[in-house]
Amino acid sequence: MTAAVLALGFGARGAADVVLGLLVVAATLESVFAYCVGCHLFALLMRIGLIPAEVCERCNDIWATAERA
Image 1 (spheres, rainbow, N blue to C red):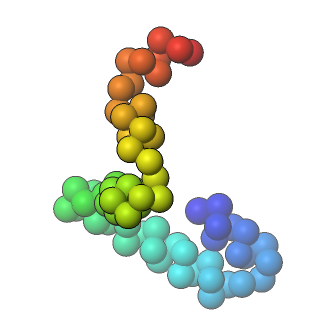
Image 2: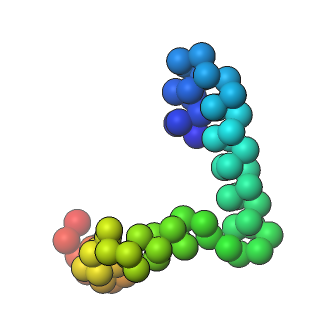
């Protein structure tokens, strides 16, 4: 959403429309088919090594995070 607002601010109406269209598609996939595009992209980035496994281990333990706060 922020990218669309920034695109509109810079006068790139077409880019804003594309970003909003992608957002609607991702939200529809999540709500209708329980398919999270972000989750699958995250898994792909982990599989190819751009995100280390420790990141998922740390965010997967929500109780450890709550105790630190």
